[in-house]
Length: 130
Image (cartoon, rainbow, N blue to C red; front, side):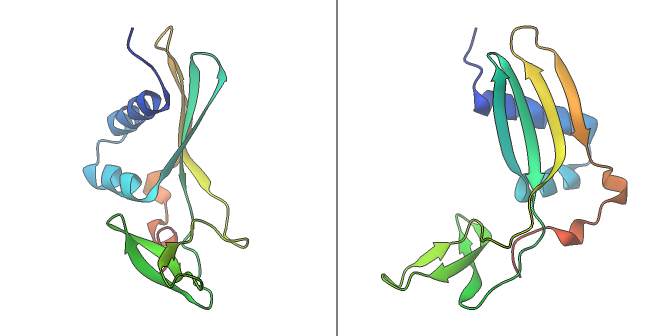
């Protein structure tokens, strides 16, 4: 049996998302805006979540730059002058789970946990800082 790690579980979860939501624009949006999180509460059973974060506000000294080909909230390190990505600051809104699935690598069983109603979803609330 091939290795079933977080990366494999994440791939299976995204494939299931794509099966449930065949809209390619939605798939691309989720790929661009979501962060995958996962845990293995029981050996061989993965829970994978797709989280999105409301658009953060820029604070003094922060700006929107490009890191790894994506927009990111940044600041210039005062010691080095080099740009640094801000992953999170103390007042950022928490992530919201828009899709979750539990995968059992032994039985190959999948159980859907959460799935946002994307027909009623306000996409404009989420994204990198502007």
